[in-house]
Image 1 (cartoon, rainbow, N blue to C red):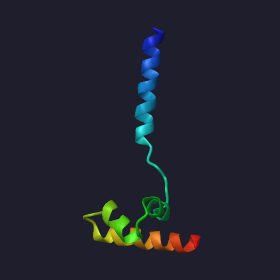
Image 2: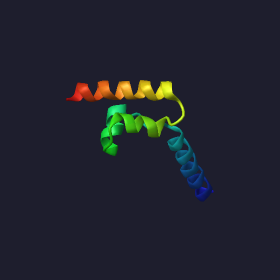
Image 3: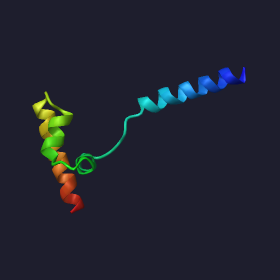
Length: 67
C-alpha cells in the first residue's frame, strides 16, 4: 500500500513539474546561452517573423536595462 502511494506521489510530482514553464527574461536566456538576441530569437521562433522581432526587441531592451 505504501509503495503504491509513494509511486503515485512521485509520478504526480513529475507530471506537475514538467507542466510548469520556466520563467526567465529574454535577456537572461540570451546571456546564459552566450549569444546575441538576434540568434536567440531565431532559435526560439524559427518560423514566426513578427514574434521573433518582438522577442529580439524585448531582449535588447532588457539587456540595455542591465548595462
